Image (cartoon, rainbow, N blue to C red; front, top):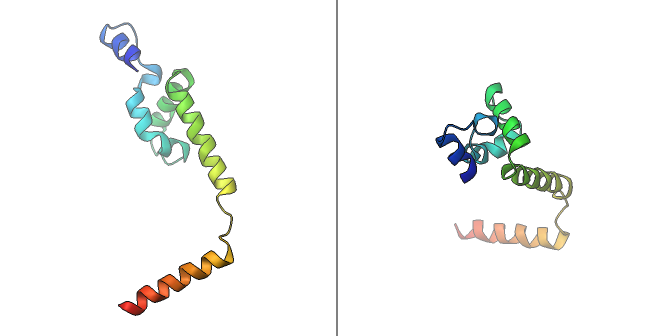
Length: 96
């Protein structure tokens, strides 16, 4: 990130995609989830990720992590755990 800030300050060019790493990181989950409404912002982030050797690995990891969670995070809790949780909830409600 410091490289691109230095480059911009010297007038030697633009940041990848005309958006800085901090802005990309701040909007990364919205970008991955397809929640950004502004097509220009989406395009700037896409171009930045295509060029930035610092941000792309972060994006790639987060995307793979979210994919893994969506595929494997839906396993059901064991019946005994469900019973203990339900019992704890009932006991908590009975105290009120």
